[in-house]
Length: 328
Ligand code: TRP
Image 1: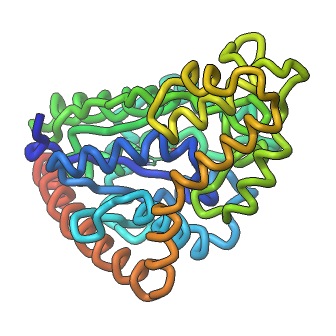
Image 2: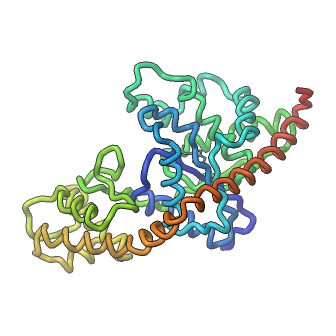
Image 3: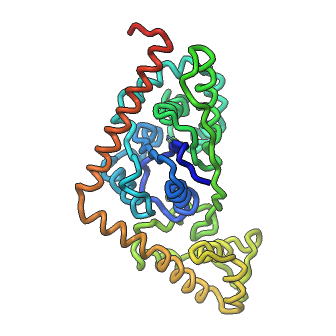
């Protein structure tokens, strides 16, 4: 299927280096959508990241690393619009009419927001925490995005966006598409401790890690004493997570990797996984290093992305104001 009619909008909070979980979960999928002809717009959510107060320092550096990770993963710099939503005033202005279209109980019910509040160590909850899903609706609707590839946890936010678009159109006339979420068949990737790969757990293999760092992380991975290697996620999460990792990197099944290893033991398993990961990441790391050589490149990519996002947002805001009969 070609995707030339699709405006794909997706994005990330700039919280730190992207890792293999991101790669197999979303990045690979974005590259594929782009290759099929979609207009891909990626928002760097540098206001939303204020909800994670502890990771919001050194933001400029984190954003630059994030864009390098995108390019390393294979996003085409000539065809990707990457922008920071803080740089697009008209996008942010959409938040006000959008907020008028949702109720406070609706905001309080959002399961992903509730979950984040539960995990945060903050003593009180900010207004931004409750309203960021509506801001995310502005991220998606400012460019009339109609396809939003996301992970499962983001589906409640896509629902908010759909509600906002529908209610706006009902109240003021048809301006917005009602976008669809697109769940990739993202495998939940285990980190080196058998639990879900996540930067905050220290079990993640960053795309930009060196081969030695990668080897060290995998060497310290949790396994078990049974020398016979089998893929059994329920009873052997550590061993199975490593098998899954190697399998994804080699494009084959974890069972096949296990069978080949037989009774080779955990040390051999780790060596095989390290080789598979490093081999897989080699071209990605090479691309990243090449782009990183020119520090102006990322900046000019973002500048061009911000300019295009501003044009799109200005146009949409004009339509919104006209539909609302705004005199302000
Ligand atoms: N909330 C997303 C996350 O935490 C990031 C994000 C911000 C996003 N705006 C978006 C994702 C718009 C998809 C579309 O990962």
